Length: 92
Image (tube, rainbow, N blue to C red):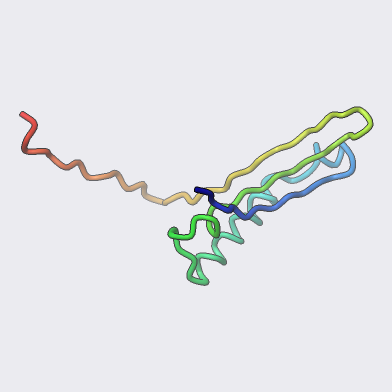
């Protein structure tokens, strides 16, 4: 079984551009995309549409070095909901 995930890849040309990239802004763009999808009617039954990611990458092909950063935005509830415990009558 497989799942297709949509994400954003930002490949920069210099190590300095990688270091100075605004990672919070990249995550915010990914979250905005998720909210847009949810507002358009996407549901959690189609995981690939709402489970997104962002990758910031720099590759130095001459030195064979690769630097990367992954971001996985999540939704945060204002008031966390704890699951209700169900008592199993068969357990003493």
